[in-house]
Image 1: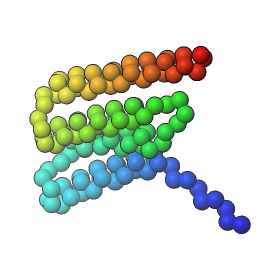
Image 2: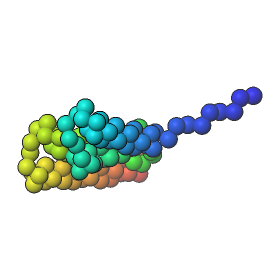
Image 3: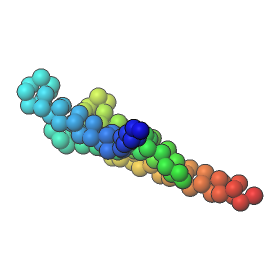
Amino acid sequence: MDAPSPAVDRQSLALGLALLLAGLLLLLSRLHVLPPLGMGELWPLLLVGFGIGRLLTPRAGRPRWSGIVITFIGVWLLLDALEVWHLPLDIAWSGALTIGGLAIVVDAIAGALAARRRAS
């Protein structure tokens, strides 16, 4: 009888891959394969990894909105830090806070509606 193989911790895997990518990009930058990069420009990869990890590991009672929002904010800030598009920092942060707040409000309302339906 074969023992069941242990499940991969997807949240740790996503965060580990984000750290691996940040390290690889920094190494390529130091080897002059890529333009100069610093950890200050790559820290949003941690948000992307954390958000993707939350998307890949759904839990009962926890909606996927949080993973989507965290990933979106991380990608947005990463593109800004790498100057793929340039938004002033105050606009980027205020936009990220707005999106995050909206997601929390939607989750709260959706949770209340779901609880009300279960009670009926």
